[in-house]
Image (cartoon, rainbow, N blue to C red):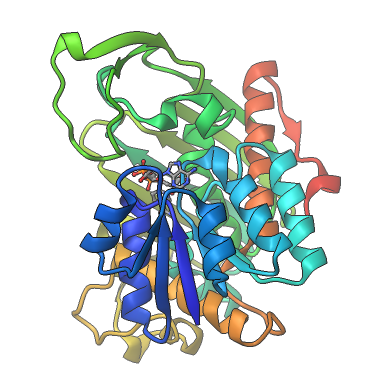
Length: 383
Ligand SMILES: NC(=O)c1ccc[n+]([C@@H]2O[C@H](COP(=O)([O-])OP(=O)(O)OC[C@H]3O[C@@H](n4cnc5c(N)ncnc54)[C@H](O)[C@@H]3O)[C@@H](O)[C@H]2O)c1
């Protein structure tokens, strides 16, 4: 299998590493307008291009990984799909629901396999939550809670392209981290969010934009003469209430300004038999709570996990599997679909799942703007 990658910043590098750990896939080229040659050398990739179109036309890869900032996801994916190339695209799938739906339709019409890198499904103990629910251990779901907290945008001097709605999209906390949370929530519970009530806020109405562009998470240090003050039009924080099609109620907090929480996702599910709680910062454990007997703390040990979860664990108990492992497992699931022509049922998120998240993000934004509950437009839901 020949793969090519467009965009080699933080996550593009993680894709290269995960593909190599998976094996059986040749990374034939990368495309990036910034230092493509240097990056190709650093990652031992044979060829480098400044733009993805030339790369696709020249290399004709089997699969393209789209790891660029959000505004380019649609254009690059559509270009590849038109040529019958399978696409693994980063999240959020696009800058709005309209683009995401266009991409989904194109993928379906062309019959190519298209996936979105929603990695959290593949933390073994998050996956095990889903299995516990499917096996009936939790019972009827009463409520679902949790959130996604980060602190990398805590200061007004923290800056990234993610703060620019033209590049990043109409929402930020919602689409950047909320899409991860809502995808996991729906995947684990098997229920769809049907109605939302959200509150959005930007703690910093202006931020200090550096005159040079730093790559995300590069920890570049700035002095005052290095930046300009710019207005911010997307949310640092979103809180949401929701209802699901299974009759559950839920709530979640999303924040990119929560000091000390580097990248924490939590998901709690309460049912009429037991409750579950998982925390990505303690990813190899799953808590299960009971009313009438002692609570349980499950360890990530393939010997005690459900057989479906065991597929996505590659190391024995006591050997931590974390963020880079989830990316590898997304790719295992995705490349299996590519190999089988997409004929089976797979655990990775497809473009329809990515488009669904864009629809949900827009429902959250509309709710926050109109200060009322919003029904998620059923016509727009494609899976
Ligand atoms: N799934 C996850 O867990 C996860 C984690 C981080 C980022 N992401 C997503 O990955 C994408 C990239 O984020 P990042 O943090 O790696 O950003 P980044 O800023 O670190 O890197 C982006 C890279 O894309 C390059 N680029 C910009 N425009 C390009 C173009 N037109 N063609 C080719 N390359 C181009 C930049 O030069 C840079 O090297 C975003 O959509 C983000 O939401 C997903």
